Image (cartoon, rainbow, N blue to C red):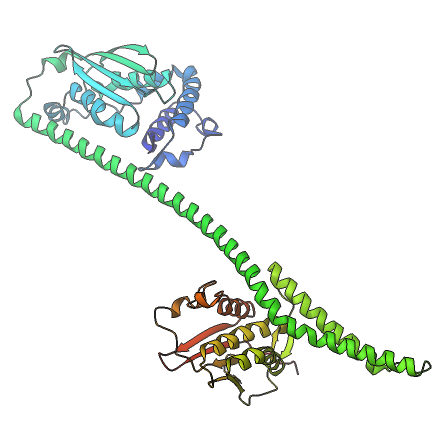
Amino acid sequence: MAEVSYRSLGFVVDVLARRGVDVAPLLHGLPISVDDASRLRGGFAWSTFAELIRRATVALEPHGGIERAVYEHAEAPLPAWLSPVVRALVRPRDILWMGARWMGRSMWPITRATFEDISRSRVRETIEIPPEYEDVPEFFVAVRGAIRSAPRVLGYADALVDMELQPRRAIYTIELPTRAIAASPRSAPDEEILKAIEEMGAQLDELQATQDALRAINADLEERVRDRTRELLVSRARLEESHRLASLGTLAAGIAHEINNPLAAIQATAQLAQAQQRRDPSHRVEDEVLSRIVDEARRGSRIVRGLLQFARGEPAERWPTQLALVVDRALVVASDLAEQAGVRVVLEPSDASLSVVANPVQLEQALLCLVSNAIEATAPTGAVVVRWARTEAGVRISVVDAGAGIAADVLPRVLEPFFTTRIDEGASGLGLSTAHGIVEQHGGRIEIETAPGAGTSVHVDLPAHSPEP
């Protein structure tokens, strides 16, 4: 809730400007500006207002003080022709009463004001600052100037005001002008006007309270959204880390077979060279043999490096790769699983010249996950079909199983990490999510087509590599 209305700032700025005081230096270091003085809605903190009043009091000392400045700031008396009409409807007492009931509260919502009659010519007004806010005696002095000038607005004489200052409180005893007291008693229509003014003030109070409550609710909601967003970001980071570490085992198992190939080639080539050397010590090792050892060692190094990059969440190194080689290696690794399940894996004739810019180790792992899922979904003697082809957007790889399809309520969640409908069979729920993550890192996407009893087709769309001419 705003503790002080910007209208109060506008009033203080006007008082200072009329006395020729430069306002800008007085606002230095405060979270308000001269532009705020023209704002009709909102407000600022009482502590800021307190410091402003203290600075204004010091600045106005050479000009007769803040009370006199506020007193003389009152508008000039009404025109002669209008004064009788206004006086018939409003008396100085009414101005003071409205100030206590409504005006002051709309400018300084935290203050409490009461107004009571002492006699026909004397009234008492009490203004209090709640204990949780700092005391500002200068504020009460400025208010006395406003009370003194109130009758003058209607063309009456000044009110006489005695002020008793207490901690966070001022009690004003006000002597009303004689002419105002001698005026005729108020008629019933006049009382109706005052009653309407009071009702309007009450409605404005209620509106202000509603606006303050809405601002508080909005601020609370914004803070909750920020907190929730931070929590979601932290949870997402943790989930990604868990996903990466959990899928590392799957990735390692899939690569274990592949990395054995270059290691076996290196070992066999080296053993052959050793045997030749033993038979004929003068025999020179052929460059072709050494080149093969170097190539296979580099291949094994790339596989290990890709594994470590995936485990750390680092961007993987990529290079132009023939799609046919990646698919072939994935199917070699999956062949044991297919044989155990009694499922055939059929590789349809496809364009062997197509290539993509990819990390072949990771892309092979993604395809291995898709083919393994398809094998597990297909009944014995069934077939899993793998094909790829060029599309307008790039390259599409398709893995088609002969399973029972995916239920409609399950389909939206199949790419979520750890989601599986075969948890009793020991499934981890990481296959499709791992493939999905790798494909997205390569700038592609996964699309799933399924129907009950008609199997499932998983399509991987990747950007094609176009060799430079």
